[in-house]
Length: 348
Length: 272
Image (cartoon, rainbow over all chains, first blue to last red; front, side, top):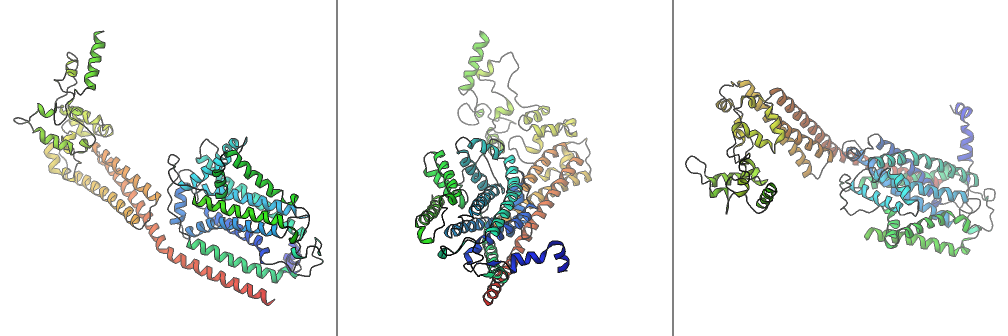
């Protein structure tokens, strides 16, 4: 059987190159696995998303009812729906943690600039998934939270109105918007995320793991030859597997414990409910609230995204951790600022 | 010029309280004391005020027309008087139809209208405006009102059974909805189905005025089929709630399985 597969697909070579003879540097620790387990969450999202698609109807009249049917009539429907909701938040947390880890380890410097850029792109695409997916239940909360989101987009100077119109497909959020968001959420963004993930992984395989930050002066960039680590299989594979199972247990526990608040269907004539965006957009929402001019708040956020994209250019030189105090303090400040704004947005 | 002045006078009269009220000054009771065979005005006023019409601010004028002694009426002297007085039997359904047009149309297509003997007030009363009851759908009652039309026991029984079953179906659906609500389960899909059933029941009541047995039966069966759908909906919901505990146990078993796998994998990695 193995010979048959090997003859056709080169399975032995694949196993040798990716598992048994893939030497992983000795400084690789649990933090390095965060990116890998984020992929697992993406797969969970894909699996639960496909199950939800079997019953979800993306029309103005049926969307809320179909979600209600999933939660109340389909066996395990509520659990898969909860998993999908929890998975979105967990995925964003994992991507943010992965980015912080990459920044800390300086794994974005030459020749790994494209890793950072593709990773940033993945974060934006995942946020786009979260944004488009939030409207789909067609509840009052999702409708008005999406309205806030689109109003934020509308505040972008020059392009805002056209972009908002393009997303909505009409003057208000209605059935047309729902179909657009559904298409973007289930086809456009998953395909893009898949493509960027493949690129991200291919780049990682090409350049290997970033060198150890504490021994950066001693090691070359392509540290495979200098560092005698262990093969990915079985040691790292098993450690990675342990984390995968742990994360699955956490996801499932959160989904089991989750008690969604009863929702009412979207009503575009009634906006009396206190609505806020999901937690990952709260910082952005709060910033817009405290900056008196809308376009200035948007401009600050766009500038921040450009700043994140240009990190490999700004800090291109290979330096040991001790000499990276200013960048590390900046990163710490940005992280704390994000958390403070999120908290402020939640309580305000 | 004269016409304009008359119109102006009429408008002023209309604006500055020319019409009578039920009680108090300038009330209908001032003149209509209910002497002789006439029903006492106080009884009429009481019935009207406590009826559905009273709650909707329907007054004597709406059915009996304007007061003939007020100046506004006098202004129309020589023309068609806006006063109706006691409506003629044939005009009662027209008067009621001013607001209940849908029912008037149903009724006017019925055999009862053709016979010209039945009027709305026969079943719904003149001033108390009651909902017709099952007691009125009896062979005795129907034959007493319309001797020439010989209702059969079978047709009356059929009407009664459809009425009873449709009322029962709606009450049952409402009760199922309430029972779920008591368990903190409010489903929009169920609410919509019950709403649809209420509308169908109302339509059924309207169609009852056609006195067409096949139409009534068809609508009655429609209500029963809606009740079955609601029952099915509630059963599935309740079954899902009952099995949710079992589903949670399966979920917990998976959590335990994942944790054991995590420990085993970690242990294997440690040993290597």
